Amino acid sequence: ETLTRVVVAQVFRKYRPRYWWYEIFDMMRRLCLTCFVLAFPRPGVMISFALGVAMLTTVIQRESQPYIDVWLESLVNLAHWQITICCVTILLLMSELVVAEEMVAIGFGLL
Image (cartoon, rainbow, N blue to C red; front, side):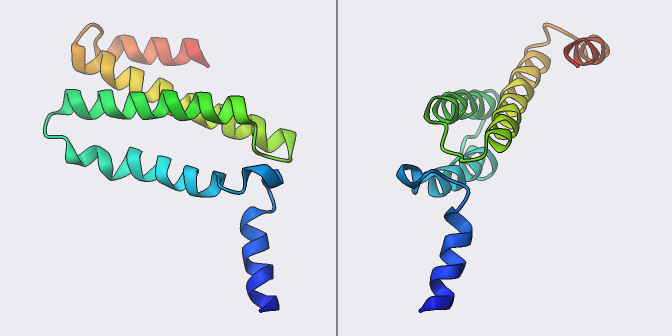
């Protein structure tokens, strides 16, 4: 029983106590972005779903601030924005509003 408590504590120790559910939420976010998105038949619908999930989870993560460590909070927030920007970039490329060569310049501009 003590070993079980130690293992479970390791999973949840980075979160504030009231956000015990955040690890489950984050796992569902990852499943939505990697597996559930494949349930849609067309690429446009796939990326729209992924963009919606990315934007919604970015807002939830930013507003709830579940992490105890401020630096980890900032890093996770940056990672969420990176995923959102990646979805927007793919959407722009699929819409053919910009070509891949222009996206390289835009990417360097965002750095």
